[in-house]
Length: 132
Image (cartoon, rainbow, N blue to C red):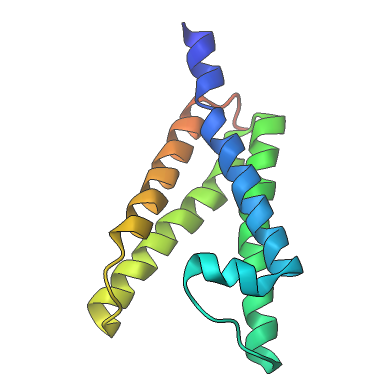
């Protein structure tokens, strides 16, 4: 039973790595299409365009790479950066609503918190913690 649970808890990180890896690549290849998913327009040129593509691609690829390393190396500390990214995304959305009048987006906040929770569980069942 424990063996099945250990395998099952690795499925969400694998799916998240694939989804966010694809999202990061999409930002590099077709930023307009990627932006549609997130509900905003891409700047037409200039520093805004470069910053948006760089930040969003880097964000997605960082999540994917860290999760891939966590799954391959079975080292729990690789789960922590994506966990923090998802939690900070949710926090940023809450602050945007409370302090800046952005609409509440529970359909985005709840999954981000759920992803952080799933990665926490995956980290708890991961193989080792290596000392630096």
